[in-house]
Image (cartoon, rainbow, N blue to C red):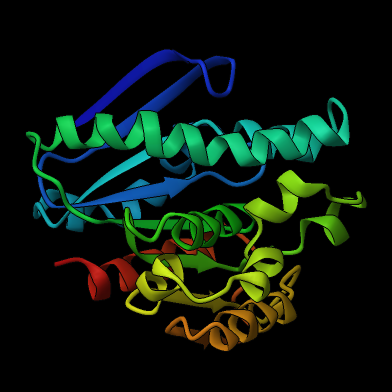
Length: 243
C-alpha cells in the first residue's frame, strides 16, 4: 500500500521524495511540518491514525519533502531564496506532483484535498487558495500562517504571492475568486501548550472577508501543538471530507 519515488525537480532545482499510502479513494496531499520529509507523517504515526480510512479505500495519501519549510526553519540561504522556495513549492506541486497523482489514480482526474499541521497547515491552506481549480478543501491543523512574524524576516513579492494572508485581501473579482467561493477550509486548533489560536482566527477572518467558506474548530486545553493532537484531528476531518 506504500510507494516511494524520487526525481529531480527543475522547479525546485533538487531531488524531492514523494511517498504514497493507499490503493484507492480521495487523493489527499499531506504536508509535513517545517523541516519534515515525505515520510515524517508515517514516523509520527499520523498515517497509522488514518489507516482505517486508507484501508477502506476512502483516501490515498501523498506527501513530499518540505524543502521550503526546512529552509525557513533553518534560516538557510537568503530571505529571497527562502521566499522563492515558497513560491516554487506550489509550482512543483501543481506541475509535477499532481500529474503523478493523476497517473497513480489511473488517469482519472479528481479534485484533491490538502492537509497539514503547523507550517504544514500554512501550505495546505495556501495551495488551495493559490490553485482552487486543483484543490477542493483544505485542513489546516494548529496553523502557523504569518511566517514573517514567526521567522523574523521581511517578505518580498514571492512571499506575498504565496501567502493567503497577503494576497487574498488584494484579490479582485475574477475566475480565481469565483472558484474559491465553492471551496472549503477547516481550521482546527487546540488550546494547550504551544498553540496560538489567534493564527487560525486571523486566517478565518481573511478567508471570510474574501467570501471563502471556512470553519474554525477550537479543541480544548488538553490538546497541545503536537502530534498526539493531530493524530486525533486528522481522521475526524478526513472522514468528514472524503467521498
